Image 1: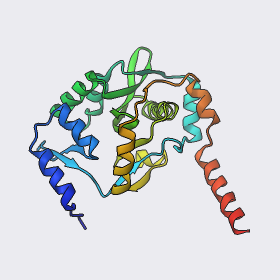
Image 2: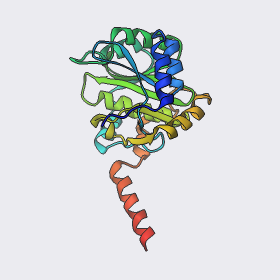
Image 3: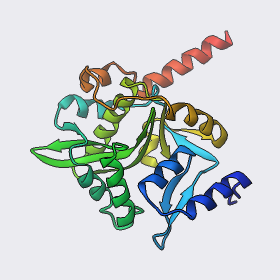
Image 4: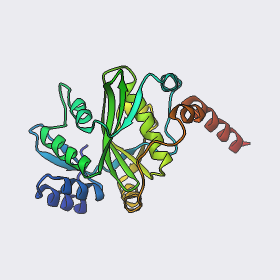
Length: 240
């Protein structure tokens, strides 16, 4: 059954819909918990779902197979070196919500320092990447792509570690998907999300690679199987 927005959300949507779609409108909407999603005709609609999907900054999952890829060093990781190319590659799909208008606005947000990209390069070519919006200690991942197997996943793993190393509070991915679920997504009620967002927005943060190598950091993290085992041990202990 379709959820009917409450009065406050509906009122905010009406205001946002009356505004020109611009970098300033995106920042205003994001700061109030909304994100843009063009409909089938290309018109931007503003979403604020009852359940928000996030990946906890301190509790993301990295599978053993991805650890091996990260350790292999087959990709060179860069930040913000080809933002326009990343968003263009993310839009290169038979069906995409990244319209030319939306891409132009996010390119301008990048030039304003509010949008960022993490990229995977191989033999001098861009082969994977992820881009998103960054405000304070809040980051919302918008889209990713890969032209070589695992390149997009390595970018996500690197993004997670950037957020953790720089003390980000929220990593928003908006809606659940099969790709995202492998990293340990959680659902958060809209009210709780709004409260946490208001705190994250006003705290400054850097967006830079940690000093330690990503390979070593990934190796030191518990993988999904180890997390499940640890959770079972905790549950067994609690029942003794």
